[in-house]
Amino acid sequence: MLKTYLKEYLYYLKITKNLSKNTINSYERDLKKYLKFINDNYNIKNPNRINKEHIQNYTKSLIRKANSNSTITRNLSSIRSFHRYLATENIVDQDISRKIKKPKTKKTLPTVLNFSEVEKMIELTYENDDNLSIRNQALIELAYGSGLRVSELLNLEISDLHLNKGLVNILGKGNKERIIPLNENAILALQNYIVNSRNELNPNNANILFVNKFGNPLSRVGFFKLIKKLAQKAGIKKVVSPHTLRHSYATHLLENGANLRTVQELLGHEDILTTENYTHVSKKHLTSIYNNAHPRAVKKEG
Image 1: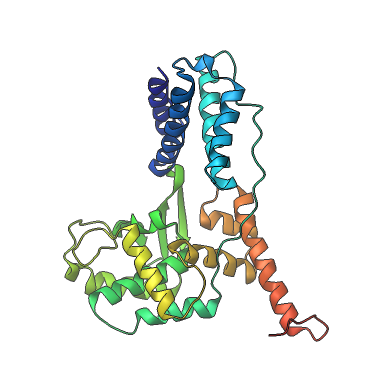
Image 2: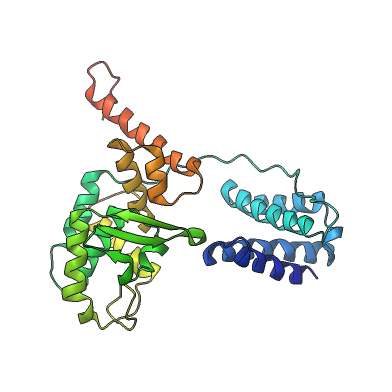
């Protein structure tokens, strides 16, 4: 019975809530583990028999397995959403997850590159002029120049680009549309790639923008490997991932005077609190500059 309700809930997320496939998959993974725990330990089939203690015990099991606070919080969020749905649909008498407290999470700031580090990575893509290098130029210029999520970047189609207007059209999370301006370097790199190199890579998909050497859509793994390789060659010691360019884009905009609401719109954040994480990074950067530059600042030796 619980498996049936889970299927109905996932369908609800897709049709009614219009959530992305990745988000729905995340809910499904979390809830399958939760319901397996309920079944294995309490042999419960009817959701009305689940109580607050069962959820608390599941949370304790996650803690015992050394899951991070953020992972536990995400799991609890999935569980609470599921139980809220059951109550709303009158499948259960009450939402027993409502009073479950989330563990306090330690905020972790995203890894951000300074402008010099980004420039080094970009410059490395211009060392060669083969088809893949030209693709990499367009890919990195666009990633840093637009702040797109990895999924948005890799799912882009040629028809999403409006290079004559300097814009790219994005269908983001929850099928929400936004338009992002492009800088001149990104426009030129994209034009060069589309005109001179993309067709040489024999794309199997007529529309997808970025393809690999086999002509297939570039994968997240392929993009991750490229970013790691460029960061390593650039001598960057930070832990760099594809999302690092997005984080750097947002932070550099704020450091150079962009307001928070504008950055929120460009990033496609539903909640401005998510965007505010970058203000903490920006303040940290400004403090570092002050400490290094002001004659009365306390400077660390070494």
